Amino acid sequence: MEAAVGREGIARAYQVIRPWIRRTPVVEVGGGDFGLDTGSLWLKLELLQHTGSFKTRGAFTNLLTREVPPAGVVAASGGNHGAAVAYAAMKLGKPARIFVPRVSSPAKMERIRGYGADLVVTGERYDDALAASREWAAESGALTVHAYEQVETLLGQGTVGLELEEQAPWLDTLLVAVGGGGLIGGIAAWYAGRVRIVGVEPEAAPTLARAFEAGHPVDAPAGGIAADSLAPKRVGEMMFPIARAYVERAVLVTDEAIQAAQETLWNVLRVVAEPGGAAALAALLSHRYQPAAGERVGVLVCGGNTTAVDFGRAAATAPQPPRAASAPPCPNPSAP
Image 1 (cartoon, one colour):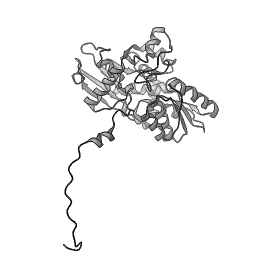
Image 2 (cartoon, rainbow, N blue to C red):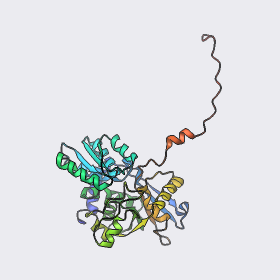
Image 3 (cartoon, rainbow, N blue to C red):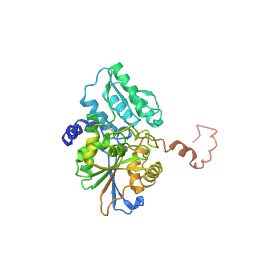
Image 4 (spheres, rainbow, N blue to C red):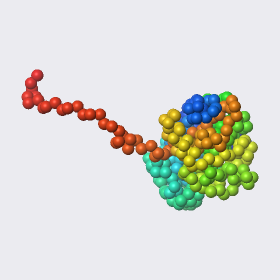
C-alpha cells in the first residue's frame, strides 16, 4: 500500500482537487507567545478549509476520481468526514447519506444537514455508524467513501503535506493529530522521511500508540473530549505500514491539555479550534513533545467544527450604548 500512496499519487490528486479546495495559510508564531522556551512555530491552519477541516481534500479526491453511481455516496463519520463528503456531493450534484454516532457534536451534524445530505444518527461510537453505513451501501448501491481506509482518502489528505512543504520547506518536525490515521498517513507518505512526523493522540483514544506497541492495528479505547474526531476503535490497515516507516512515534495528551490548547489558540490567535484540531498543539504546551534547541516545529491545526464559542450569548450580554433621546414629532410635516 505504501507504493499506492506516495508523492506521485498525492501530486496527481492535488491537481484534480485544487479548483475545489482552499490553500490554507501557515502562520508563524513565536514560541514565547505560547509560553514555550522555543523559537518560532509554524501553524498550518487547515481548520480554515471548506467545511472546517482537512477532510474536504479526501472527499473531493474520492468523488472526482471514482465513478459515483446514481444512488450517490454514503459515509460514516464522527462528523468532519461526513460534512466533507456532504459538501463535495452538494458541489458535484450527487446524493449523499451520512451516518454519524450520537457522540457527534451538534455543530458537525448541523453542517452535514446544511449541505443537503440525508443525515442518520445511530449508535454511540463511530464503528456503530460505520456498520450502519455498510448496510445502506449494500442495500442501495451507493459508493462508500471511507474516512481513512481508502487509497483516495489517503491521497487527498496527503495534499496537506504537499502544500505545507511549499509554504514552510524548512521544517524539521511536524506534529499531527491521529484518529483513524488518514491524515497522518497521507502526510507521512508525502514527506517520506524528509521531516520528522510525530503523531498526537488523546490518552483516552491511543489508537496509533497501541498499534505501534502491538506491531499492527489493534482495538483501543475510544473516548475522551475529542471522541467525535480522534476515537475510532483502531487505526487503518492501509496507513499503518506508512506510519511504521515514516512516523517517529505517537505521544499522548490529556483532555485537560487539549482544552488548554483550545484556549491558547483563542487567546493568542483568535482561532477557534475543536478538540481534535487543537490536539497537536497540546503536545507542545503540555511538554509531551519537547523540541530540541533550534528545532523548527510545525503544528497542524486540523479542525474547527465546535460550538465552544457562543457568539449569540456574547452579543446578548455585551453592554449596549445609550439610546439617543427621540426628537418630538413635527406637528406640521409640510413645514420647512
